[in-house]
Amino acid sequence: MAASAGTAPGPAGTAPGPASGSAPAGALRHVLGHLLTPLLMCVGMGLAYLGAFHAPQPHDLRVDVVGSGPSAQVLAQTLHDKGAGALDVRTVADRQTAVTALREQTSYGAYIPGTRPELLVASASSDTSAMAVEKVFTKVAAGQNAPLKVTDVAPVSDGDPTGQGIFFLLVALSIGSYASVAVIGGAGAVLPLRIRALLAAGTSLAVSLIGTVFAGPMFHLVDHGLGGVWAMSWLYSAGILLIGVGLHTFLRRWTTLGVMVLFVMLNFTSSGGIYRPELQPGLFAALHAFWNGAGFVEGVRGHVYFDDHALGGHLLVLALWFLAGVALMAVAAVAEARRRQEPEGPPKEEPEEELQEELEQAVGV
Image (cartoon, rainbow, N blue to C red; front, side, top):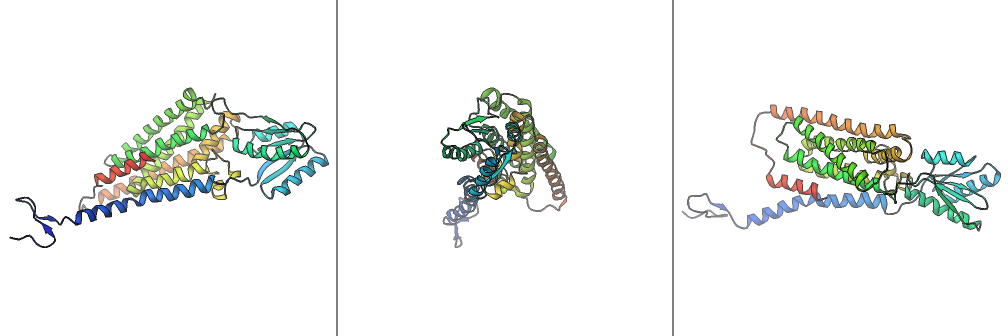
């Protein structure tokens, strides 16, 4: 019997297969459909990174002028007015008050006028903020025909001369955490959720130990307080893993994009590791107050360089993200239990190539 239109005869004893032209068309649709994820990543990363970093400008950057006389008041008011919102300039009575404000991170520079003017900064708080302040007061000193002496009251460790090592530690911890989500949530989807939760906890422990080795004995990013750095690394990583594995129950192959939005695009840009919120656009400055990356970066800075000042608030941020992960895992457990109780239909197993693509996306970014 002749083969029907649109089909091609198969080997003897087999059913006729589809016409040869349909296979390339199906493959093309498959490729185009899956190109959506990397294109969205491209758009998201461009908007986030360029939006946050392409043109840093100070706004309401707190600086102090040391002195209580009329000349100090006039200088402070002049700088405030000329800054047009860039600087928040105030006067403080003496040098010690200025140093305290710098070490409590309520100020980012203090100018002491005189025949030998001096600028106090705290580079451990933010090297880029210190440079922005130094640029302003170098011009002020030049207007007085006097060289400017710069004193760093909270310098960074010798192993982190730029002060940005903590940010790159954040990057390493984040990639190790969110890339593991695809493995535990995707490849481990057949496992009970409690086993996936234990894998997330164990993986976060491994990631935090790796990060601690980077921060201490390998690169000497910090010269003390390594135990606290490890604890914050674990809490940060565990929060990402629990949230990611919980999301996988609902998002499936879109989980990689979801965790990238949460823990890369919005997270790295608002962490304050490169520019503090006083040098960033409003969205990222606002996120800095409660996002987990900012909690980690500022928590490590406060612990290592500022005698644990305001550490409790940063730990609270990390703890709340961790608890959000625990809550999401609980919601995922309820959802999976309901799915198991539904009448059985056709099998809905995730195709192997789709799982493989998810793993590659997670590891490759």
